Each structure stands twice: as C-alpha cells, then as structure tokens.
Length: 243
Image (cartoon, rainbow, N blue to C red):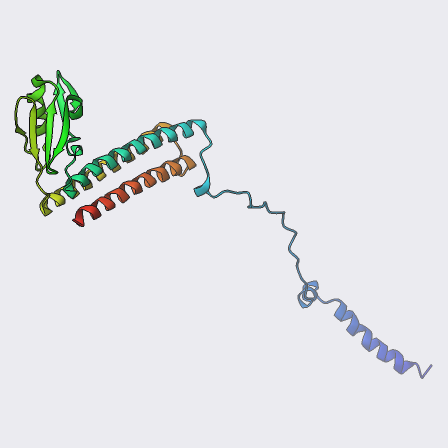
C-alpha cells in the first residue's frame, strides 16, 4: 500500500489538468480546426447554340414584313431615279451629243405635261447638233418654250422652219463639268432625304418599340440604299473629274 501512494498522488496531479483542458471554450476548438467548404452543384445552364444575335434576327410579324416590302420598293424607286438623273449628267459632262440630253424637257399642251419624244423626234447631226422636229406645227411654240424653261446648260434652241429646231451643243468646259458635279451632289442629298422619309413613314406607321428588331431592319435597309447612292455619286464625280 505504501508503494501505491506515490502513484496515486501523481495521478491526481494529471487528472485536473486533463479536466481543465476539456473545459476549453468550443470556439477555440473550431478556430484551431481547419475545414473546407464545397460549392453547391449549379443548375444546368441553357445552351446558347440556338440563340440568334439581334443583328441576325429577321422580321416575323406579317404586318412588319409587308411594310418593309413597301419601304424597300419606295427606296429602290428613289435610287433608280437618282441613277437615271446622274446618267444624263454624265452624258452632258462627257461631251457626247445624244437625244438623252433633252430627256428632262417637258412640253405643256392643254395644261398637261408631255415628254419631248411624245410630240417630236430628236436626232443628231454631225455629232455636235441636235435636231428637233415637231409632229404638229401648232405645237412649235410650246416646244420652244419647254426647251428654254428646262434651263439646260449650253442649250440654245434655233428655229429653222415651222417644224424644225436646231440646237448646237458646245463642248463642256471645266466650269460646266464642275457645275454638273455640283448638281449630282445636290440630287444625291435629295435622294437621301427621300430614303429617310420612307424609313420614317414606315417606322411611324408600325409604332415599333425602341431597339426592336423591326427598327434595326428598317435602319439597315436605309443604310444599304444610302450606300448605293454614295457609290453612284462617287463614280459620277470620278467620271466628271477625269475629263
């Protein structure tokens, strides 16, 4: 028994220490114990393979498609008109003498406008003179008036007899070609205004929302037609400036 007393005494000294360590604050244990967190499984994402960018979407509403078709036709007509007008300017700037030089002339008979070719023939003599021959003598004064009213540069009608008018066509000067180029520029701006007007009328009628596919498609159509006008004008200026 005397041998066990030192052992029991040492045991009493150890047990309180263990007891005191077991009473440590829970938070201290948590802080000293490292742990990991794992992200929860994300929901499956929708595939974007079938999504179409806004710039590639097409019109689907029947009313919008119909209005787009109408606007496209109006714009195409405006561009065709400009191309025709510019073609006549190029002919005049080149110095070529053709009946097309008198295409803008409109003859008024009994209050109604007629094209010159409806009331007379137009021919070329010696490559530098236009000859206008009216069908009916009583229309002569009306044709003369129409030629003057057209105010075509370098056009000076000369009556030869009761049915014939001679029009010498002078070679275009640098100043004349510059004036024609200015006219082409003005007509181009007029055409652009017509294109924007057609766009505005169509979008106003449709009452489309801001940033909608419809507004974007109409804008792309207008931009494409304006680019056509710009290309025609650039080519015309090149032709006129190169002579």
